[in-house]
Image (cartoon, rainbow, N blue to C red):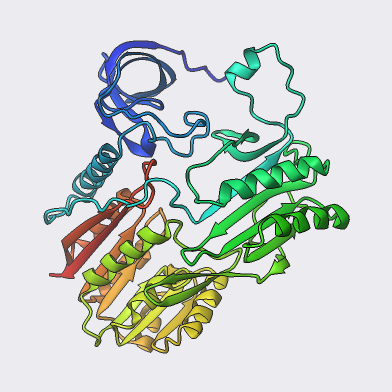
Length: 469
């Protein structure tokens, strides 16, 4: 029988840092690190642990002897329950400080490479309402707050439309408001829930795998276009049409209204047939005169305005003159490739997801960009000597891998390739630092620019320029 972790009370711990995954950090009397999920650096707290390991504890603050000067009042009524904006109780200037510190520490401790002066992090102009895509789940098993549980009031209506409670796959927090996506996002979500209840439509039950309404996705763009997608567990044409028609009538500004009938065990869309109900099946995003067609399955950077800043830094680091051949690895839908194309001789984009490459080709055609080519394939297999012989040795490589960083074979091929410059865009500076250590054999880091894409969270992007020694 597995031994349960004994819960320990640790009193009057000073919170000294903000660590990985947004957790606050303190030191226990026995020297172990303590990761705390509800504190801010500068707080003095009493912690109840729920996990004990050889080198650390994990726990929650159960009382506060002193509140940090870095604290601010969270704007959202759901803060602390939702889990989506874990740093909303910390001033934005302090969020930026700890994001910068994390990148600097990862590059120094993990990378152990010679570094230039790291540029101050580029903060986001918008600290709220910056996301262009939100996904909400329906549930007939609403998460009840402690106050609701303790009250004598019987809550008969357990319907919810909102977010999963962290660590609870079958419990949904019913949202009153969300500060992540601009209007009319909240209005659309609230209307859909109210109308569904008025029509007596059933909300999904994850455990029983029954109910009618599964998820609601809302996408917006900087051009003012709106996409709404409803996911139903089974077909019920009459009720489906009543709900969708009501949405069209209430929000005539919706550009694209779509739906999916999905009766499988999970609610991922990528293997589903998307049906158009009203408008067109896509919206457009625009950046520096370029148009990008976004459909329901498209990947696009979630913070459109800050993505523009990220791409400008990437292009500036590449130092293009118009004569360069560029490889854009992990190109996704080819956004960066097309963004840099007008200042390059030619750009070759490579990506593992076939739908993303189809979208990249379509967008390049839409933008009349003729000096880009896109290829689909597993990076560690397609990015080989045969590929390089066919397309030529690049002057610049841009790489924007997933959180896991680059596969070892890709790093080895980059070292063999010997491009003059590599611009490495990363959403995980720890795996980026690991890759920089491997590239250090032939490349020197000459520029580092952190970029905050996600205010109120611990997530941060980092752009590094490597130049051949």
